[in-house]
Amino acid sequence: MKKEIFKKWGFKLGVALFATIFCTNIPIYASAEDESNITEAEYSLDSDALYNQYIEFLMTSDDGISIEEYEGEEADTGYYAAKTALTKHGKIVYELLKEEIIKISNGERDSTTINIPYSSVYGADETFTFTASELNMTKITDENINEAQKKVFALISDNAIEPGLGEVYDAIVADVAYYLYWSTGNVVYSSTPIIHVVSHTDDTVTVKPSEGEQYFRFSINVNSTYSNGDYTVDTSKTSVAKSAFDHANNIVNQAKSMSDTEKLTFYKNSICDLADYAFNTWIGNDHRQIIYVFDNDRSTKVVCEGYAKAFKYLCDLTTFSSPEIECRLAAGYLMVDNDNPERHMWNIVQLKKNENYLVDVTNCDEKMFASPDILFMKGHIGKLNQVINGEQVWGYQLAHPSRSVFYYYDNSNYNTMRSTDELTLVSEQQSKSQDSEPYKNCVWEVLDGKSYWYEENVRQGTASDSKCFSYDGTLRGREIYDPTSVGWYWLDVNADGAKAVGKEVFMPYIYQNEATWRENEEELNKNAENSGANAEGNTEHAELAEQVKKAIQSGTGKWVRYDNDGKMLKGWITIEGDLAVLYPNQAGNRYYYDRKTGLMAKGETVIDGVTYYFDEITGVLK
Image (cartoon, rainbow, N blue to C red; front, side, top):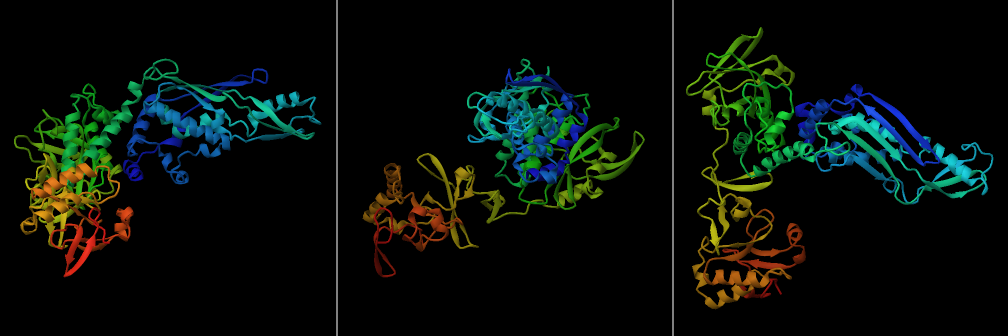
């Protein structure tokens, strides 16, 4: 999904940015006596450009998490090219530093002073060996070991013991500068390299970083827009973008159980509920627009760009039942009545190949001239050609009850569309004659891996289904019979009508008319006491058994079992194969379920003239 969205938007981030970033390193001091190494660096960063890239990056991922999840794809995507040139320890510092910088950019951390402990970089038993010749010494002895240690210290910045903090930060800027949109470009990095000798010979000395509070420190200066101090960000500002995209993802999650057309309508309505239009304003290529839709702040106004990009973003995050559905951006001019054409952005939604509809969420918003859905999923009533601002353009007229409405594509669309077919709308007449969703009656529809039962185009088993069974004031669901599979199924209200699979379900008798069975009061009470206690160790046994007993005695309910396809089990059943996966504690057990009602046999039961004995509680054949 993430990579797919990335390709749709066509964003190019990361290493290309480094060509426009300049760096100067200013050594302050580094001496064995001070046992410290501090460097100040200055990078030329364009905060607005980086913030736009940061937003673009969030738009390429489902949850705003860094694309480092795609380990192994670096050669393909060009991401993290600078990181690959670092030393072993440099790469470790890079990842730890990047992790904290991401938290800052997402509003999850306020301090921009980042300490990376040596213990996170070096292994507990990691050592480093230097030769006498490398230290310009003829021999290493107990008498000159302190001199050797100082010389080791002088060499560590050029040796594998030192990760190269300047190179690490250069790589961060080269690879993921967009995470630094809040920075002035100034950074001070330092280390407190304390080492001790592990052993030595005449020719070598082996050292390791000392244990204790040693760290690599990066202090990154914050620009005035996001600052709450030189090395502190205002998280109420840095959290806005990540929170906005989290909100967008929540909208998509809310729509998971809806049909495709229901999802599109829900997205339009959600955007209109959240956004306020900024009248008399044209903002081009400002990615903050999509943030202003989802930030829950009515003071941040948006123009058509925000509405259109927000709608496309929600669609790009969505797995539609139909793989042919695709949402596109369109840009050009909108002309209403005889007014001058104005710059505008809208969407085109493809339901099927060569079946495209116009969506103008902006003008479907409250107080706009097409509210609430006059220009939502519409075909055209005429194709047009026009010259606007010296540019030959073409487009369509769309129907409106009281206005003349014209949309014209400008040439920018040809940079993002694969062909003019993607701009071509169906006619309004075609739109009305084509049923975009087939009539569904007594059929299953699979959405996001769950099966839903439809009758006369209406989903069954939901809270609004009048046939659903209610017990003790709680709505449970309903049973349906599918003649195609010759099976009974349970629709779970708690799952918005989804078919129950691989579980035991409490269901009403009334749908299978067991009046004859209920006439035997003694048998009824015996089964009532055992029902609901099929799993050993069920901590809710007493309460559940009492509830079921009451239901069975009143002739209102029972417990049955469904397989991993959701079909009610009947007849002889052995818990093996897929059923053993569903019920591992019952693997190998054999049960019998009434061929008519699905009721589990318990106690002494006659089946086809043969008497069998089943456990009174669990129903296992003895």
